[in-house]
Every structure is written in C-alpha cells, then in structure tokens.
Image 1 (cartoon, helix red, strand yellow):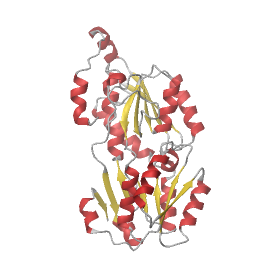
Image 2 (spheres, one colour; image 1 turned 60 degrees about the vertical axis):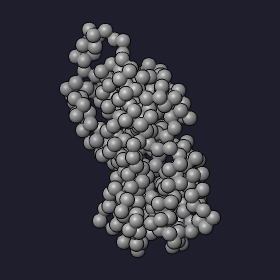
Image 3 (cartoon, helix red, strand yellow; image 1 turned 90 degrees about the horizontal axis):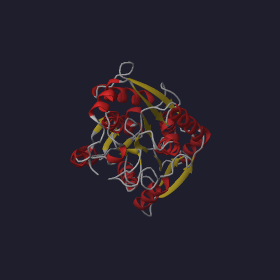
Image 4 (cartoon, helix red, strand yellow; image 1 turned 120 degrees about the vertical axis):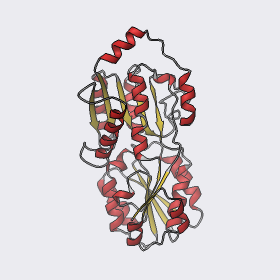
Length: 331
C-alpha cells in the first residue's frame, strides 16, 4: 500500500481503549527498544546517521529521550548471533515497542514475542519472510516499512552498466547468512545484465572475504561491483567503498548516503526516509494504535545519487541523461 492510501486506511481503524485508559497511557514515560543490525556500535558505520535521524523524527513527534521516553539501543554489526542476543535482551526489558532496522533483526525479535508491538524498516517482502500475514492487514504485533521489491536488482544492474558501459564482469557481494532476500535480487540483476556481461556471486562472511572478492575483481579493468545492502555489508560499507576505490571498481551501493562516503552510484529508498517515516507508526502505537491495523508501507520514490568525484577518479564520463534524472549529484 502506498502512503497516500494510508491515511484513508488508518482513519477507519479506531481503537477500542476507554478514554481514561488512553489518558493514563499518555501520562507515563514510555520505553522502547531499537535494534540496528548493521553497526558495531553507535559511533561507526551508518549508526551515527541513524541515531541522528531517528532522534530528530522522534522529537518532531513529541517524544524526547529522558523526558517522556526511554530508549534502549542495540547494535549488532551484521552478526546473526549478536542480533539474536540483542533481540533477547530487548524483549526481556518488556518495552512498549521495539523498532527494528533490517530483515534479520525483524525476524529475530518477531520470533521472541507475540505481544510487544514491533515496527520494522528496511526489509524486503515481509509476507514471504513471515513477518506479517498480508501487507494491508498485518494481523499481529508486527508492521512497518519495506525498502524495495526484488525487481530493483535489475535496475541496479542497468544503472551500473549505464554509467560504466565498458564492464564485462560484475561481482555481487553479500553475506548469505544475513541476506535471505539476495537470490531474487541476483536473479533480477542477472536478467538485466544480458549475455555480454558475466555476473559473479561473492558470498562474504568476514573482512578477508570482502578483500579477496574486490582484489579478484580488481585484476581486470573491465570489472565492476554491485553491493547488496544487508546487515553484514552495510556494517562494512566504508571498508567496501575503500577497497572499491583501491581496485578501481565502479560500484553501485543501494544505500542512501553511500555516495557521500565515496561510492560511485546509489539507487534505492532514501536512508533518511527509511529511518524517519516509521516514527509515524511508532508514535501512533505508543498512543494506542494496534500494529495489526497499520498496513505495511512501500516507498513512494527511489533516490538516484551519483558521485562525480568518484566518476572522475575512475575516468568515467557520466551520461548527461543519467545526470538529468539524478536526485543528488556529489561534486
């Protein structure tokens, strides 16, 4: 369901709580948990951006840490064991709500509670992966915001080849342990590559695997890189971008903010929007709404970003047609 349909859908879903109960709920300090599976701590990777954006949106909604809400943060560095442990901790705190960023954290928390409301973001196909019964009627304690449908893998490949038409091999890196949605994205990317471009999968489980993959691709000048955004790769995004620059690999990373960190091109749901827009659901649930009544939301628009400085370093001439449709151009 698109966001323009949400207001109409939500207007028809009134809660049955008595007014006195609502008043009591409004007066007490709330406690929520936040599980971000793509950062080792609050100071590294994309975590500082996430914290800033989340706190900014919460403040605009009237929720201020230390005043009327307590927030317990957990960061898991793309490690499944760490995600499971953090999920256990947050559920044991019995918060009023848990906000999860990424599919593995959403799955981990949803397995551990059927009563605590859960709001997810940056996940793909929550029905397929068992988070909700349907998009329009989630039906349980879980709802949230998706990041894309799987056909976007083909768009990623098309954009990479448009900005670097000389490519003959494109490596796709991801960690299969934390990217259950990788296969359909790769299928879509391969279909878009055509017969003239070989697509090579690199399943990476640690930093050495990432360096080995980029080093292998860097041995030839007509190779490029496509990074599937998932907890493991996002937690190592700076390392991947540095290695791509070192081995002169035109690289697409579908993660908002990646081009500002040096990636050549990015196309996907705005990172800012993906973190901040779910706060509207957090606010509604804390005020008495039920997750089962809040339809899962899909992005209204994807954002295309191009780093011209990186293109120049790679001796690439960005087509004017691509620049004309870019939402962000970094010079």
